[in-house]
Length: 404
Ligand code: ATP
Ligand code: MN
Ligand code: MN
Picture 1 (tube, rainbow, N blue to C red):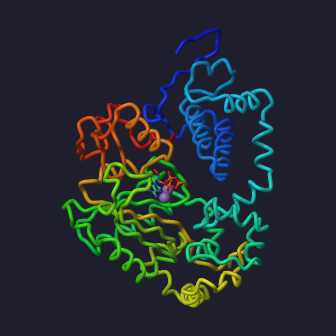
Picture 2: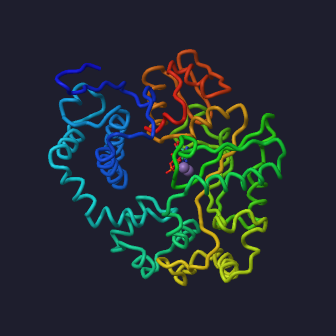
Picture 3: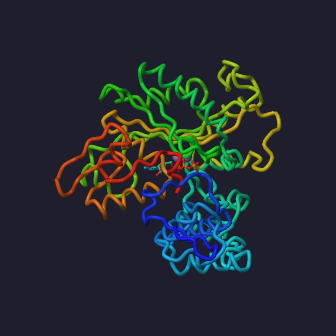
């Protein structure tokens, strides 16, 4: 870093996985603006543009001080013309017309509302918008067929669009730990995702489960899910079995960043703070809700039933003693644990950059299962995240500094 007439010049390496990005972001206004354009691009199926904006935002997140002049950005990586124009507008006029008009556009607002439903992606939302559906009310009136995930997503819309707190994540950690240890003593549960990176809130809670003895984890997920279900902790769950050994493209070379671990996407029924600690499963408490939930689960079997129409979306009953929280569970064998941990800790951009670094700079293929060295034609083993960084020739970056 050179000091030149009081203007601080910044310098950052080009890959996000080479940088230490804490939650201490000195350029929130700029990164919020670029993230919004990234989100808009992703929702419009323009992934290339989305990544470009994400990379630009990540560079600004890594700066040690606020940007005050365009001249400070000279030589920084990942800042394309478009991103620079947005930054310039904000530095000069306090706002970017492009960002403001995107934010206010009917299409963006509709995409946000509709993809805010768990189970609804940009393709479905786009189709609905073309059918004239722009909000939840219109969706309900439309008679559109919703799958089981989307029905649950719509039913718990307000809860699921409210950030999960660290305290709620801790409460869920205890429940998951109890479930896992009850069905397989010695099994281990690790909190991953944003909470492992030190975030105080998140859109869900992510867990990785393993057992120190290879093979003991097989068949674990259905047992955990059964335990949680029988205790009344699950409002929704969909378990996908492990398909790692079934694929033709081979381990370490997945066709996308999707991994093939046994996984459960779920919605937890978490007792409100004042109710927690009462060692009674939430749904055994006789409230109007529990009765309602029971009828609900029966109608859930029928995809044609528009059972959600009976529920208020905007005004949840005040007496409710619980709230819905999205929870992701992943089971990994111990031999792949370090890769799974690294892959599920995020951030998404940090992961993407790790894989890009591995491929472009090291001729290696990194996934949440393994690291393959294309030059040596062999897999590189690792028992810890530190070892994976070392294999990749990268300085170790702890989770709290992976907030790119
Ligand atoms: P938030 O606080 O919003 O939940 P997060 O960083 O925890 O932020 P998630 O979407 O929960 O974001 O993802 C956590 C991690 O899991 C990310 O690193 C992501 O790459 C990884 N991940 C999520 N879905 C998949 C998937 N289908 N396959 C592989 N990895 C995934
Ligand atoms: Mn998460
Ligand atoms: Mn998640």
